[in-house]
Length: 321
Image 1 (cartoon, rainbow, N blue to C red):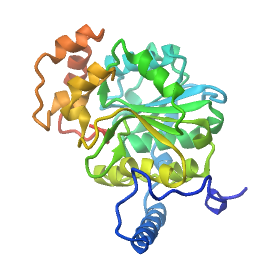
Image 2 (image 1 turned 180 degrees about the vertical axis):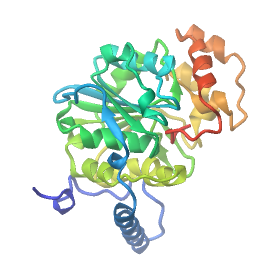
Image 3 (image 1 turned 45 degrees about the vertical axis):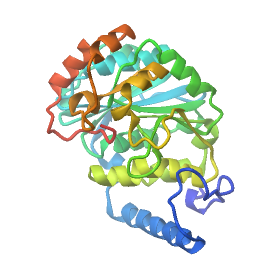
Image 4 (image 1 turned 135 degrees about the vertical axis):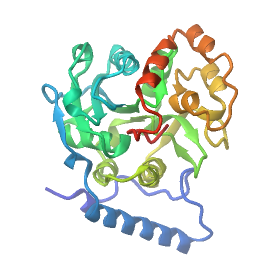
């Protein structure tokens, strides 16, 4: 079998896209590309692969060929799935997705399937290591027919919702012609698509670029995962010549989900970030958030229950808040 690294590029590389790293000349571009490739080779050789972390399937491995697939990463300290995560999972299933729950927990033995087993296509329980990218990479590695799916959405539980406008967002994800489509773009650190919700089209799913990126994910701390995962994903996909799209945009805004959360909801974004309500790091005006979400058809009691179960200083699987 041919190693993906030995195959020809998927498409003609394009180094002049929105997510490219700024350089002053062609030599600088080549040097940065060489440095990144050397770093990836080093990390692959010296750091653990996510699938090496203890994991088990609860039930059969799902068949995803020809289906719209959703890999949903959720963190639970004690292995019990939160009501908020269950509500979110059901919303994706009701939109016709084959939902695979990837539960990352400090106590895998604490998980006992509830009603989510009725509407999830598969449930993977794994030890709490590697953050959300480690969870997604494990699922992608262990699902043999994922490349034959009609599309793939990856989601984590760093967002609360969805509200009643969720079907509108899903329809936009499905109809976007881009190979990679995300919900929100951020300028924090450097331009990138926030990773809490991303949709991969069929051409990208079957590509060498997709295989190499997820096959290169390694276990590390939060800064490592942000730098090699979230900040790199859109850049590497666009570098390979694939197209990208973002549904809700605020040009040159560091992190709209933490600063312009109210405007996002008014635009139809069906979520609010957990980090915003938990930490409010940008000191945003949060007045009326409960009433606003309730008016959008979402019960904020689910947020109270979820935040009461997560210890604030405990490391979680989330890169995105």
